[in-house]
Amino acid sequence: MPITQAQTVPIPPLPGYSWHLPTVASWVEPIQWNKWRASLRVPASFQPLRLGGTVRTIAVANQKGGVGKTTTVAELGAAAAARDWVVRVIGVDPQKAGLSAWLKPVYPEGLEPKRRRTLTHVFHKACTLDEATYPTRFKGLYVVPAGSKLGGVEKDGDLVGRELTISRGIQSSSLGVNLNLLDCGPTLGTLTVAALTAADAVVIPTEAGKMETLGVGDVWGTIQKVQEVYNPKLYVMALILTEWARSAVMKDTAIQLATDFPDAVVAPVRPSVKVKEAVGEEKPTRLHAPRDSAARDFDQLAGVLFGDGRTA
Figure 1 (spheres, rainbow, N blue to C red):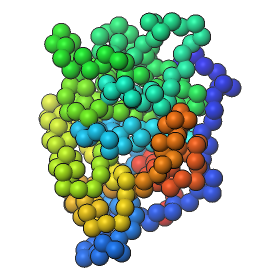
Figure 2: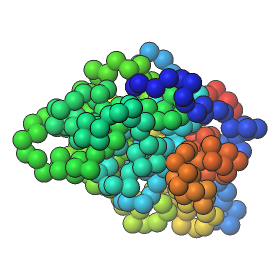
Figure 3: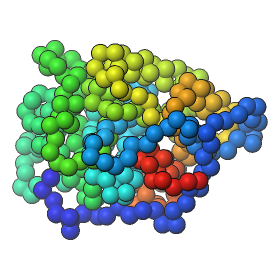
């Protein structure tokens, strides 16, 4: 990671920090949808990932595209970096419009494009995960680009043990990373299985609706298979309701998710055009628009997941 601290842009805490959304341990029906308001469901049994000697890894997964997986990784990564964690975001999504198009790698001066390493090279054993890790221009935030040929990993039968590739890369890392965040693609194939095998916990972004909750069920089915074969300690840490709006379907979805995952956080993130603007500016939303509702929603969620110790 050849970049000096002086070259990086710090990610500060949000100005005028406050837990603007109420937190509840449960939702008690009946609740009229028109009185439903954005709030975080944080069950009494929930245990945050606190900064310590153990490297933590979270996979952000959902087989449905366009539900905010990359946004979740970028914003939670920036929020963790603002809390002085050293964060590595890893692109496990083979789509070109992926994580490293938003949080761009800063390559060493003079490094030819053909010598730049990606997660694809890691799967093909051409480099280690650390060697494919590059700084971004933001302090404490590093990125592993997916690579344009990452999708071929799904079909390459010669890559024996590929489900363990990311896990082994993280276990052998010596870069002093506190938190790895894995941005999974919109499939439940080998790449997502490799990410889930490496993870301590899963965060599932979703939208409101019957089809969306069925999609969450499909992710849960894959998680259970990974638990059985590779990673028995894996669990669902949080579900994020992206594009939150006051509606009957949103209320029903939130309560269904809370019922299906009684030990997980269920959190709203309100819609915001500032997120798309931030992608264009190639910076986290909290730096582009620090008072934006979505940026603050993600920051409050980070406070819950990472154990700030603040109360509502």
